[in-house]
Image (cartoon, rainbow over all chains, first blue to last red; front, side, top):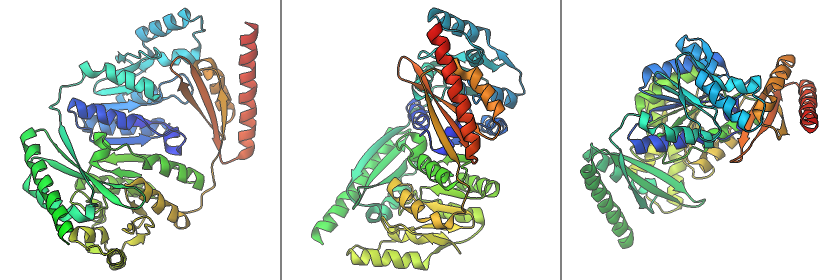
Length: 241
Length: 241
């Protein structure tokens, strides 16, 4: 994923799209491998996009497709592909109808939202009409979270069906330091699962959430049983200490 | 910045450190230029870190410095620098004293939190003792937000003093489409400022926040006056329509 916008790098806006895309991809069985955040710099956007689209099967972008001068994503994506920017006829038609219906002027600024690289397909925007677009393996979407989410929801049919990753969480009232050695041994003995360990700090004590992930549910059952037995052993050792 | 962790890419954990670092850097007058998020893959971490530390003056990382088997940041950072991993004597001493005082066992897992690349300096952790570390222009910090924030707060003296960026926000009840053309003209006439335009969508209507940024306060005043005059003109045109 490529999140675009000076406002993300200045801290003015806290990104909400990365975590959402991550959740949706996980549910779809698609592994999100890398995220980059860059500012409103056309060369930086184009270079980063070229790296990502050549490295990964799919790339999703957020931000920079609105009507103002700082919305430069369409131009930057077109430059990355070496394509001209055009007013997409279907996008113009949708926007024109939308503003006519509302009695609003279809300004030059609003017409900017119809720009796509030549040959791009549109991504529907059920929230506020102005579409995203797809070109090759790159999906270009809005930065406003409600719109990003609606666009992504509409894409599910266009995405390849992955084998969903199953995950199981086990709460643990001990800190990572109490269980780390034993957990490492379990991870070595169960190579078909990935065991993650996530510390929580409530201000005075650490606890841990242990998460077991795999595409093989039997492997999760086996690893989960090993973790539960380990936690019970730690508990008993403490009780008898 | 480099944020590290499978949990960020699966959506289980929503990152809170990127936005915080962005705010702190902006206040310090340091421009955050790029953020990358990668999973718990040692080669990916090392390659990404090598790219970032050669491209930028400073690099901050979050995540992967705890006591469990999936905490591999220290090894990956050492590999990036071509350095061995050592038990940092001062880090061992701090952790040993901490656990002795609390009557807790200093397990092998907990000792993992003392590992740093050879020659690294420590970053204090006033929250839960286990330190981060600095090597060259790379600052390696915890992923738990309370700890990341405390570590970063302690670093301010170590960071170069930048010329703070001043920003001024102007609320605008029109959508971007109503003001985009005029705003683009103002941006062209005021090259010493960066004008950002951030759409807000309340579920039925768009409004816009216009933000003017510069290191030159007089330039901000001039651009802000132009924006205010433009908004007033739009208002009057609407009232008379």
